[in-house]
Image 1 (cartoon, rainbow, N blue to C red):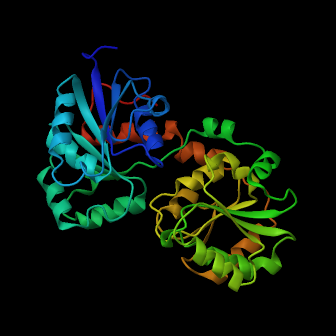
Image 2: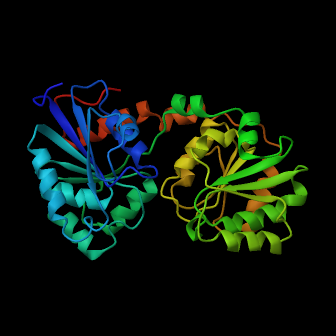
Image 3: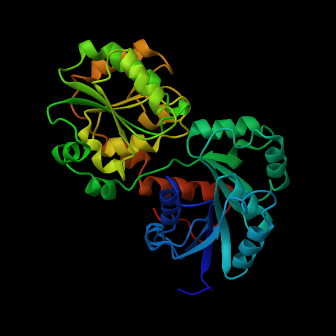
Length: 372
């Protein structure tokens, strides 16, 4: 490896939550090409496991704190500008708005801003910033729902400059990590004979576990004997949700497990996975449940309908009766087989093919597209 090689600069706010895997996903787009990837984490201490998990040729930890990330961020811009001069960078990929802002100000590179949430460009100041750098700024949403939200905020932009690149999952790696149904239930302390509805997420209004508890309570008499609802995660609504389960008379059947490290390893403990979020931008947890071959239920909001396609069961957002009906329907459903769906839409290979098409459309890196 030489600094004279062509390089791609990837800038991430940090590596918390899903963003380490986001860095891996985008670095892997250049596997098999002559491009090297330098990934920069603006916040977070240096960590050997994060470095290994980034799938990059080089990783830099700038270690900035939350105070440094406010305001004009001049120190960070200077650091990124210095890095950008250190080798032959051809492209910058920036995750979330602050890294996109920094990338545009610190470099003269084409910048692909990856957007993982709704509402990123609803602020006037951000719309103005995007307009200022429009000639070299391209925007991606992690779902068509996010893409369309950005397009509605930037109506003067050509639609072709605001596109979708789905999140994806390393299917084989996650499969190898997931433990058997019996071992997963042992680890989580769940009865082996129970029929288990699983949910994983923060206990937050956005995740709407209240609707899930109400729907489960309404469906309980139609579900198999020993049915339980298992909620994995922590958050400020825990006491309120526990009180709701007690009020509905199902407190013994609703189990709050708190935070479970690397929860995706234990998804086979569930018989069905249910997502009730109100506006999930994508729903990475759905891909993890697919790897476990679980039947899936989801509200019809955000990016979840795209992720599930025609094979999942949707219910109108917040509709307790519809959710209860769907739960009763899947109680007799056999384990699902999502592998073909995952390979076609949410694998690293599918992402490379899509990304290569986008680069061609945008006229970038014409000398060598990403390998399929």
